Image (tube, rainbow, N blue to C red; front, top):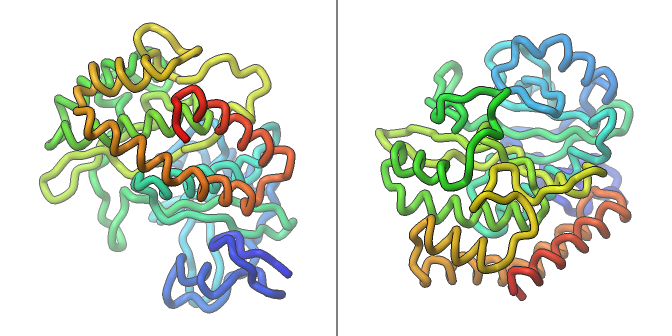
Length: 310
């Protein structure tokens, strides 16, 4: 019996479940395999890289969903989705990102529509709907924190978590609310081993006259991907990037730097605690290999113990 890569449920002999198709669109009746192999997708991503407004380490393609034809199509302009194929060096990145985004969604972090689709070589490709687009041609104002800080792709690590909080104070309409979100995201990234949240992986979105943190994106357990990983965070906190303790992440960062109340901090930690069982279920039902599932679960349990979350 097959399992739907969008809804994570059994789908008989079909490639996708009805529930999975409806997640993409209520009008979608079927979805054809993506018409490119993983290698062909990487080549297309390389050839079209200069036309992409969203870049990064992972190869990316801009696409639209053709509902009448039941398939994703690559486009250079007007894309509503970002597609990420299998990496040629890092293993199971689409499966990793899809699972990690589901874990984030479980604790109430805002996540765009996303999932996995089958490609013609039976590899899985990750898709995520763009949150900076609406309607046919309208763009929603979004600036990443590197832009806000006056930095660029080459200097995206030349900052600190404390300075990011100052940007939130300066640019967000309701900074107290956004700092709670940022604290939750920071604790989440630590727990799931995402040590690559640099300035370009945080963004400010402005809608209806309100500026706030954008929905989350590029959430990956990079610790189990990179063999030489020696850090726990991309931007230094209190001058360090590894060997964090509960006191440093919760008391220093949450209470002293984010200026959150004990009640707000406890609410975040309780939300995470209540989600741990579901997290483990999602890891088990994910499309990662058993080896990667074990690595993911072991790291999560280690970090939960360090923060005293049960």
